[in-house]
Amino acid sequence: MKLSSKQIIAISSFVILSLVVIIIFSKLKSDQQTVVNFFTLYGTFASVFGICITYLQIKSVKEANEGTELAIWQSLKRTNQLLSVAEISKSIKVINEIQNYISYKKYDLALIRLRDLKFSLIQNKYNNELESIIETEGYKKLITNLGVDISNIDNLISTGREGIDFNKVKRNLATIETILSEFENKLKYINHES
Amino acid sequence: MSPEYKTFVSKLLEKTINKMAIWNKTSRENEFILKLADGSVSVDSWLDDDNEDLFVDLRIWNNKGEVIDILTHGLKSPDYPELKNLHDVVKRSYLKIDDTLKSFIKELDSNKVAGEEDELPF
Image (cartoon, rainbow over all chains, first blue to last red; front, side, top):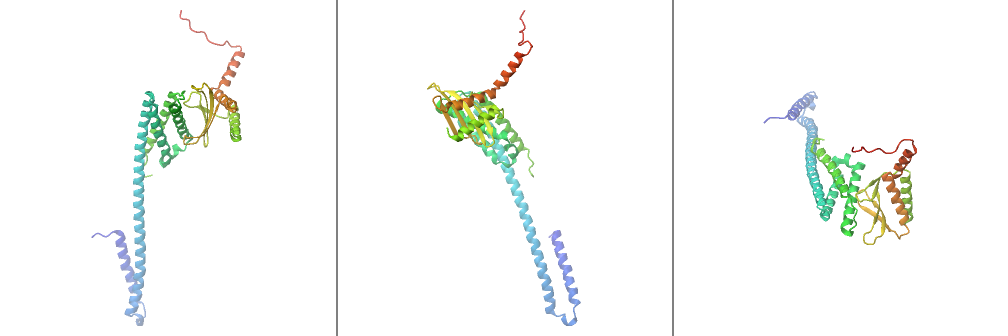
């Protein structure tokens, strides 16, 4: 059995301190050098030594737990990043789908997918890694523009109110696609240890 | 229109006339939107196909892109002229009509020859 450096230090300390106790005992007056006094002295030393070892053990277990916690947290963070990348890729596909529906004038289907896209954009707000981009006025403007487009298409379907510039809707979608591609790259190439 | 909305509309008008509000066009041909810190406000004007009536609306949007309030007024409504005036001012501001006219007048006042000759095909 190979002993660790900590175990070797503990055993060495025990042996040295035992010798110190024996030396202290030998320095006592001859009438005090009784078996009871030896065990009292040695017992006190053994108790203090035991308390120190227990303290160091608890500290070591705590450190190990913290290390495990950190590893779990990092792994969880990475899993969330991968899920976010998958979600963003899905949103980019949804944008292409919406553009096709608009080209074929299938506005009711486009509306459903536009609502899904808006939900994804709002969900990104809760991704801490993307905070620096999402907290900008530009991102808020994208969500508002998407909301306006949804409302306008909804009005077209429900009340027949025309006058929508679908090229503008497509341009808004293209801007969202660019921003989402930036998110995707940011998450893909992020430093895993941070 | 409530007193709060009357104040809001007059503030929008004042800010737009003073060129202190940057309006953008939405996907509707006659709708303009102004982004503010806690949301946005849009104004639109359109002709109803069925009733052949003119309408103007003012919408309040939150930062999630949801409409939280709408004021819609038809031509017969007493509040129509106020909102229509706002829409006209916003439209002129977005299209920079006044600036363009000023530039035209300045050009016509100068001694320079206005316009360019087309290249003749012979």
